Amino acid sequence: MKLEHRFVVPVPVEQAWVAFNDLERVVPCFPGATLTSCDDVAFAGSCKVKLGPVALQYTGTGTFVERDPANHSAVLEAKGKDRRGNGTATARVTAQLTPTGDAATEVTVDTDLVITGRPAQFGRGLIQEVSDKLLDQFVDYLTVQLATPIEPASPAESASPAEPVSPAAPTPPTPPRPPTPSPGPAPSSEASLNLASTLLPAVAKRVAPYLIGAAVALLLRRLLRR
Image (cartoon, rainbow, N blue to C red; front, side, top):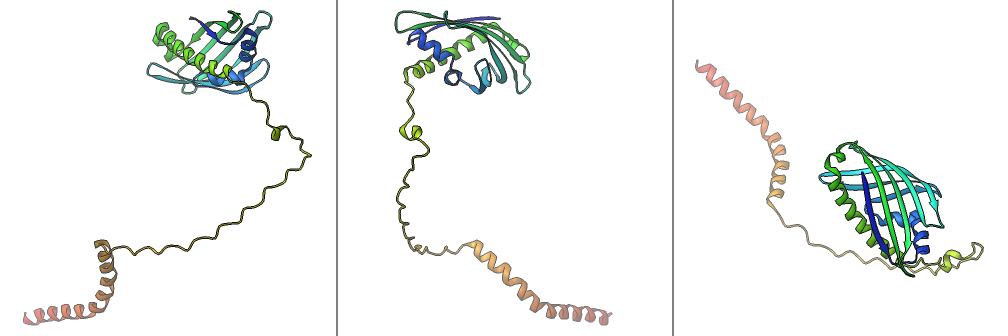
């Protein structure tokens, strides 16, 4: 299955090229994507996507197969597997960055996608629709990211470790306030029941001998009458 996408980012091509090669900066712009590790060539991560009624979470790895800084083009391959066992996905992505004026770059992305398992049942139409929506969100987030300048390190972060930092003066503790007495709980029917259950065993213990004696006397009386 082949997917084609084209979009424009409002930065010069050199700036766009540097940004697209900075995976730690670009990957969070893609909805549901998380980067777990990366180096100059390979990367690993996960991606959550909902395809119709099926929620997928692919985990996998990717590699830059080709990278041409002069022509601002790159080819990468990625493969992943759904954590719930709904299938696998393999993609070969070719990206081409072309300047359109001094302050904009057109990005063309061609993807050869192979999917297996349950998602393959939905066909190309639904997959194209979902990928288009995800890419639109990606472009919006990426545009904001590219428009935000990277802040330099603060003086505190760039200060030499040998420079002592004077601690702030401790703030004297505030004396605790005496607790405000709260009114006792109002009597309830539950309290009455608990009181009765406590007194009844003691009363029964004292009256039990008299009750037993009366029962024995009645029994003897009936036997004598016979």
